[in-house]
Length: 358
Image (tube, rainbow, N blue to C red; front, side):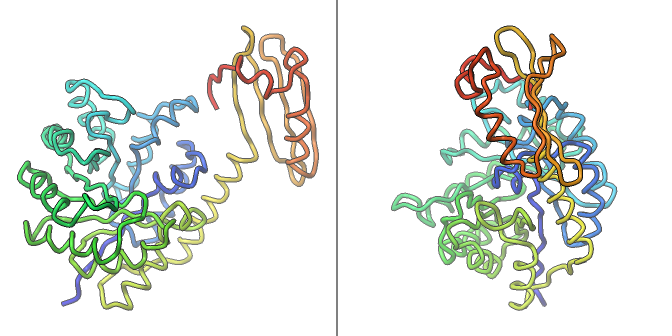
């Protein structure tokens, strides 16, 4: 019987890893039906990591964004998952236990099914409390082995860690190869060893394409029994991102695995929408900030083949800079040279600027 391998679209990490901003909630809701129409994803990474922090910085309510973004996937029977930082929750510093307990309940209520918990130190003491908190909230607890390469980080090291997490009650294990430096055979041995510890434990492999190992690694972990593979898609696959679902599907299908078919018309629709969002975010910036006690707004927009960049003082309702050109770079270059901040350029005034959003 063919071994089945399922795919998860790491939509959150695709954007975060490529440094291409984060889509607004209206854009997320717009692309969701086309992702569903692709017909090949059992799971979608919808939130967590830096996603909700960027929502806040942009001036959006992340709670509203997560609810609206996860809803269509639930209706289609697709599981959603998020990334959390164990003791830190979604922050970069520790969060009190009572806040973390509430955090999982809130995320479950907002529509997140699975929490992927990691500790950069690979210290299970930092991860284990989250297992109970996730279960109390009705979530699936997926715990991470953060992969690196050193004399210390052996197969035995990772199997000991996995055994402790499984004994603590985690539902799934994620092989989190966040830098893509895990060697393929090494990763295959880890997956095989985990399946020996608990045969029916679900294993999901997460990797990045940069160092060039990850296609071979995906094949090795699947041969060893991996159940889910995280994938990306154009135009945000490869590079610092993830292997493209088309390539992964073709490779695994050729190797004899049971994998879902991809609706290519829907793939191209999603690809076009992602490119549209990237262009919108890159070419239509909007940022509100404070400078010496007054509010300013910088905005850029594309109309047909002309790009316009503007700076206005909101408090005095005055336009301080405006330029239109067929070339965006010309507008940006002119703005960078303009002495519009009390006879200073933006780089000279940067230390006095406080960004409000954008």
